[in-house]
Length: 346
View 1 (tube, rainbow, N blue to C red):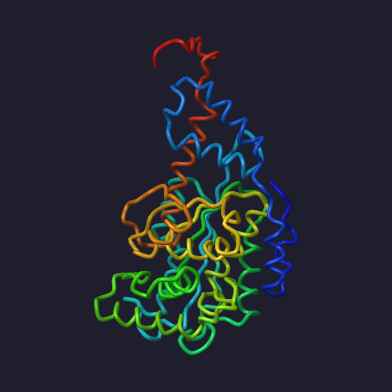
View 2 (cartoon, one colour):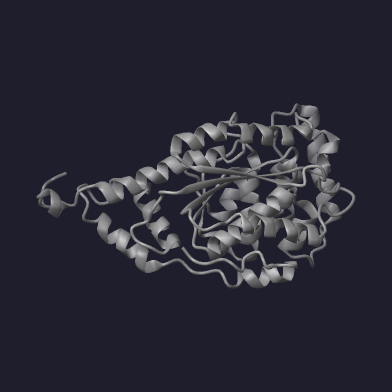
């Protein structure tokens, strides 16, 4: 893997913009090796469908062949949102810290999924006692707060693992995600806002009104995606954005979880669509804004299981598919080793 030791040395959004220009390209030679080897395996060409493309994707972003998934990492970032004071969620902000405790004690869904797929779990708290500001009245984060959270996320990309599953925990963050999406990609608040943790119709109406108000307040057209993100985002979302950048610099492929994670990636996409080519979206959330955003970004999720839990559950579940793809690619016999002629009708 590449060296990303300089990744946390950022002190402004302008430095982030400059860092984005340094992102490495995919290693096409490694991808080509995967394609050539796949053609020799004992199966009809293309018979493993999307699994074949996943191996090529892994090889190109790990910049080595064969790709490896021996040391996967699942990282969950937790932060609180000032907008939660308006009760936009079915749960209070205190649940964020309670769920972090549950992660640490091994009682959450993501803990079980990490055990199942042998992923190393790390949980990162971002000033839970200090939520972001109310973005219907002022910017959610100052530039300094946003950059500090991004740097924290960058530092989570350490040597020794070969893929990262990103997830979040933060009461109110689907409200933030909807506002960011609307500010970056247009439409109305109703287009982007969903029921999150399962809110009732009255709460949904209030959530839509708050998102509309926030975007109107911060709709200065001269602002770029990073400025808008600071205005409407969250600390855990900023950390995810930083982790995505650092993973690219370190040549570590990324599996994004649901709506909130995809929104963090979409900020980079709005700057340059190629900046998130190393990111795979694990699943399609039931949040309506997620499907809309995936279409705009041209990202096809691996799974569509009606998930809306967050906490990197979908991303870790998708890891199983990637592991299966690599196992087939590296473990199957070739026509030559199996003594099978390619003329045989498979």
